[in-house]
Length: 64
Length: 139
Image 1 (cartoon, one colour):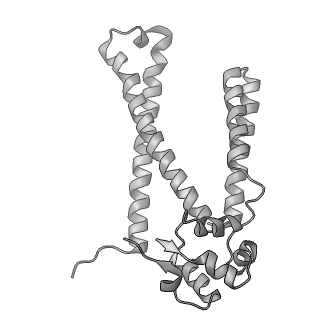
Image 2 (cartoon, chains in turn orange, blue; image 1 turned 45 degrees about the vertical axis):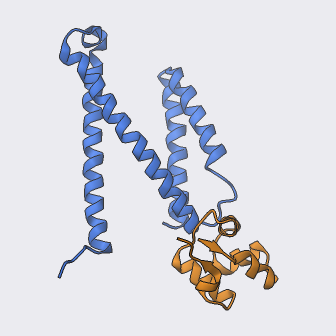
Image 3 (cartoon, one colour; image 1 turned 90 degrees about the vertical axis):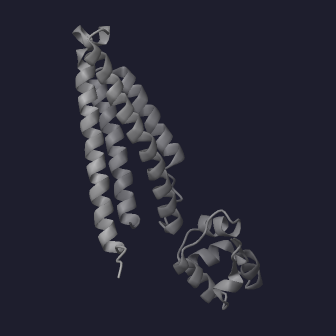
């Protein structure tokens, strides 16, 4: 699974800390998601897509 | 699990380590003191971080993976050790089944009780969680 969290975050002029506070997780979690080291829950994925005003499909790209 | 429970577990682990150090010092079991100190240092250095003010889903996932690994390592070790402690006693040949080494058989029994207890807890927990999350109802 790939994601465009970093791209959307920079486009929205948000720091990792800002985004972490907005979705209620730690900065380390945002770093892990951006580096594809951690796959977020569906709940967190929805929160991220809501903040970036996009869909989950655009934010997370499924690669079997 | 929330931050409050997380802190409670941290407190209990720290308390256990401190108590084991104190008891081992009172009973003059210095090997246990050294091991307790070493475990305490390891715990403080690797796990107990001041940055963990936010207890989020990644932290839960990490804990679950660490618990899975610990259990998958701990239970077989305990089970194998239990039988290894029993075999010399059953054969009646080994020096370990006599005299001052007789306690090994008791230790083996305790280990088997512990493993059986853990299997029972695992089975019950699995059953309860299965009922909570949902059985595979065939229609």
